[in-house]
Length: 237
Image (tube, rainbow, N blue to C red; front, side):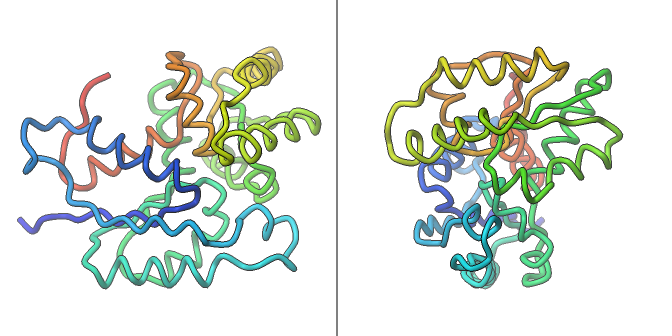
């Protein structure tokens, strides 16, 4: 059987990409180096900002750069590709058309994971960038699965963007109390589960050792799916 190689179109952001790579190793059921997934990773940090373009098309377009990166990973031998950035999935269909190998969709996989594990879930809260929310990516994925979804109010979205851009992306400690307050608002508004739909929020999930069944980290879902598609087994939680 031919060895499967995972291609990681990364750098968006760099810290989230490194954390994803760490996840792949730590979450794989392996007892030796040889039992881990072969990975090609391009941590391309200079890709233009995705949210900036989604909100204002006069901003630099990241798609051409991402298309070239995906093609580079395919030429290098990637069997499938992942993009550890939720907002970048605004461009998912164009990127998939640019290559002949499958690109794992973090958004559809995360919603599918929740509805499969927790079929009683009726409403999902989405914590994400303004770009992801404006794109409607999670809203569509939830509708396709027959569940309602909600996003934070305008003030809380601004606060989340501050946490993502001015704290995590800037290499500063996140305001965990404010982060948890926003999750509390979503739960109070009737959300059965809350998705961390930005990989910078995954960093907070790690740094503060969050262990809540009702808070789902999209990056963890992507790592588990990547491990399975590459023919390996993920460790049981």
